[in-house]
Image (cartoon, rainbow, N blue to C red):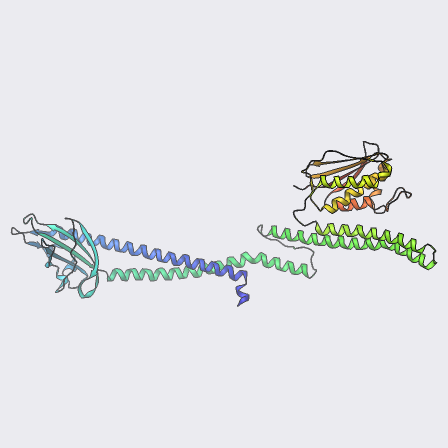
Length: 457
């Protein structure tokens, strides 16, 4: 039972059927009420015509006594007992009391029409529902008339019609209407079922495609889907592509780390087997190299894991100010001048502060190692990118060697301190964030490192 209730198909179908049933029920009530009102109005109109005919046939003699020539009435039901059409003339006294049945139709036989006394204007018509002969429900119309021959006298002329046939007609209509609405509900239910089956068919196709992806027969959702479902398919395929990229990146990082650690391990193993006298120093040096490789790969892994987190924002100015204070202390013996162009306080990096510090710290440290006297930093907005330039007045790098120094472990001068990982780490982190680094000739004469990163709003 829970399985059926939890089915989207069943929920849609049940919701549609309930809505249709309520709509048809309301339609049945409204149509039934409208038909009854129409029939009753027509019946009342017919009785009004009969009342007008009787009023025209009503005459008074010289003594003021009423007379109606029943033979002059056109409807034969006036003459047939209990035919369903009746008339009666009552005399109203001055005190509001009445004398019933002064004149009446033959169809009433030995019965009469009873109405409660009510105030009426001359010529006005009142409509009542009540009981007639043999306690049958009737609709009665009454009118007050006066005789010119007897100005003080007041008469009430009543016409009544049997409501049984009208009620039967209304019931027959309601029966036909209810049957028609039930048939219509069944047809609409079949149409709703077909619509639900057809409408959910793309979801079943998507389920089959998902099974293919899960069981390894496909790398992405494939098939033809409606335009309303296709955006979902595209987003899901994008998620699959992102996951595949993450897995591929993890495998690459694992392979790179294994490759990077192979050399230090081999050196330590060779030193241990040869019984080198400086083995402790050798081990310490190779452990330091291994630690740098591990730290670099951990940084890239952490960045890759945090790229999808929304709302990351790091102001640029405080990070640069803090790094410049550190670099001035690190390179204090060389008396380098670290200068910073005015930075807009609204500039912010769309990423973590630790990653921005690592990238800029490597660039500033590299510039400090090679600069003769000056390192200049500039940060600005370039469209949707944050561009930070680090320039030095050192020897620079030739155009043919600039791409080589971005490779992991590449060093153009083996006599200079360092592991050759600084610029490579910057390049890797920048590309993980969707940015890049470009090496150019600086206006100061040395190297200009131009770092492009995503700009936070």
